[in-house]
Length: 108
Image 1 (cartoon, rainbow, N blue to C red):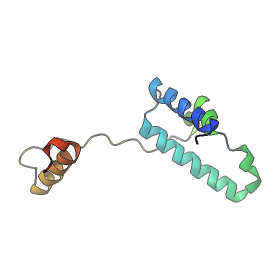
Image 2 (image 1 turned 180 degrees about the vertical axis):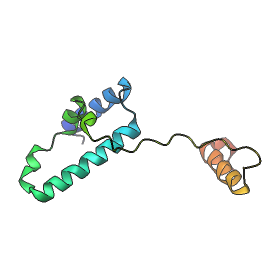
Image 3 (image 1 turned 90 degrees about the vertical axis):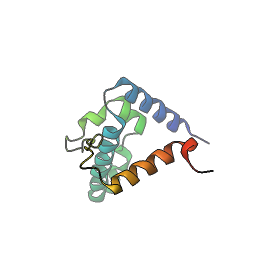
Image 4 (image 1 turned 30 degrees about the vertical axis):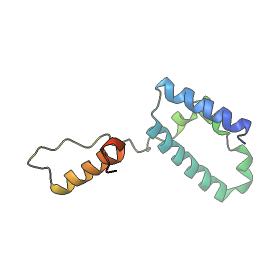
């Protein structure tokens, strides 16, 4: 059973992502930094656990913007290689991805 907090969190997440203010990858990176900061804080003062914001509240307030700018940026797609640079292992990796993503191309 999904609790009310989960529904609120999911709704807040959807609102933030569809607004275009932040990408999923950036939000995950900032969430991990935020969680790490709280883990350190709780290590020093365990009684502060009651002040950890609920996920929906954190998202709705836009508190992900308050997380330090050290959040890793998504690297984006891999650069395109010329035919000269393309190795056999590159071809094998690419063909496996293609087969995995398209069931019509896989063997019966």
